[in-house]
Amino acid sequence: MQKKQRLQAPTGMHDILPADQPYFERVYETAKELATFYGFSRIDTPLVEDAQLYEKGTGIATDIVEKQMFLLRTKGGDVLALRPEFTPGIARAYLQHGMLNLPQPVKLYTSGPVFRYEHPQAGRFRQFHQADFEVFGDQSPAIDAQIIQIFYSLLKELKLPHLTIEVNNIGDSQCRPYYKKLLVNFLRARQYSLCLDCRRRMKTNPLRVLDCKEEKCQRVRVQAPQVIDHLCEACKTHFTSLLELLDEADLPYHLDPYLVRGLDYYTKTVFEIVAERATPQDSGKPPALAGGGRLDNLVKVLGNKDVPCSGAAAGIERIVGLMKELGITPQTAPLPKVFFAQLGESAKKKSIRLLEELREANIPVAESLGRDSLRAQLARADKLGVALTLILGQREVLDNTIVVRRMDNGAQETIKIDKVVEEVKKRLRK
Ligand code: AMP
Image 1: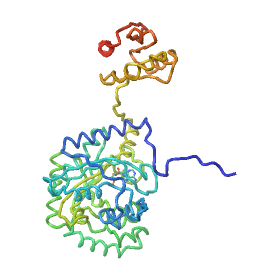
Image 2: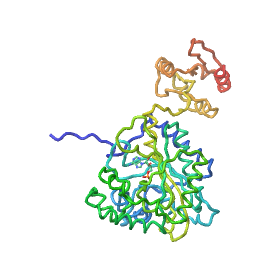
Image 3: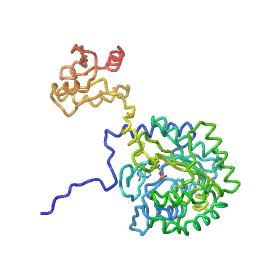
Image 4: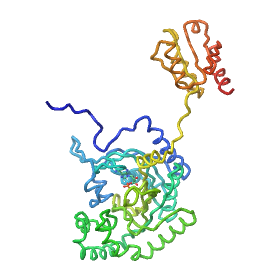
């Protein structure tokens, strides 16, 4: 007989259960505080976009577009993709809504789920969440530094220790083509020492060979020409200024000549932030918590407009995973200090309005409206460890009163129901 299959979340996708919500909320709140401080406005773009947006913007030869997009065909025949990242969608919105005509720079941020058809493993999901910041219309290295500062502060505010910023400059359309040629010549001569993927990448996206995790490819790259030695004057100046800004801001960075990030649209600055472990988990470098860089060609590719752009995204699951691993607890909403118990039909009828009155007065209250027995309700109040329980029975309804019970000594008082807010506040202050 065929075994009955239990329904499960799709492979690589997960529920965020109530116990984990405070962690996610804490990350989102911190991102929002930083966004407000640094003048970023929130934007929300659709979960799906025309697949061509990513083919053009992210790049045909990237892993994201080549292997990782969830595609769907609409009844009308359009091919849409579940967003694998935020940046192209935000750039599309910038163009579509004429944000080019606003005073520049335009600073936008967002957060939410993104989808990539990955091989699921620890810290690598098919649906995960990102917080994403983008600045359009400013080519200054100071903007790159500000983006780096924002993501560093996000992780720092969340108390994650041992943070390092890996940074590199991968050139622009002036100098990268020449460097690419040099690199391809170098790799071609050693192609049989590369993994199969890199032999293919050598033709489609040669820079990616530099950040391949395979040991044999890492042995080859040690002798490869480095992009940093082949930058044009503009890229060199940009990089020097960026490093000066990072120094000035006391940000702990490390030059990583092999950091390329694999997306077509990066120009000049690329960076990632990692949390070094006291005891490394495996041989490779720790997974990035956030990453991004400068994207000066993106808007040009999508809308034929010269608009520089710089941005980055942080992976919320990776951050939450690390917080939990290190025992960092998010601040949670204060537990209610008051329980509301009701007895009888007429009391239950009055409950909804009374609870709303307490909520409007900012008094968090727990209740068990579904329960009828007073004993069961008091037992729950005990378990929650509240200071006061309000008891509304038939008699109190008739007298327009309510009983206030102190849970530490069981003392009870009857008060006028229209004084409940001030009486509760008074007792909680004591
Ligand atoms: P990316 O858009 O690839 O630059 O990723 C930005 C951040 O998102 C990374 O630094 C990770 O923290 C996170 N991230 C990327 N891919 C995944 C994934 N498959 N699962 C979980 N987090 C991810």
